[in-house]
Length: 150
Image (cartoon, rainbow, N blue to C red; front, top):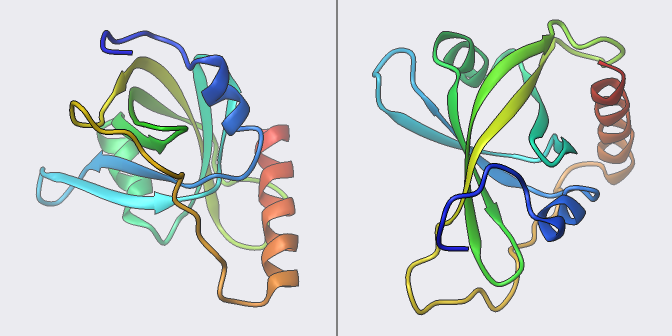
């Protein structure tokens, strides 16, 4: 995929049916420069929309409200994708979660292969949660359920 497309591929859609992590890049409201944060509360609502939940303690909320232009960096099968889009508040606060969160919809404007020429990922990066596994699973279930109802 050397040319930009405006929707997620079928393989990316499938990847977002399971919990995955991405880098969410926004324009920092204070410095005006780029900033990136790893997040995992994200899923594809459809081929042209992501839904994300962000803790209100994160500066990402203010960044996306002030300047809705974002990039989601996705580590997919064999490559890295940069997905450009616009964020809009879906629900604030996000209901039925134990702390103050904001739910955003991201309208996808472009999907590009962002891996340098001649390279291929040998595996998708993985992560582990280092706090109470049961608490993590319960919180993830609450957040994803609330996002889907938003």
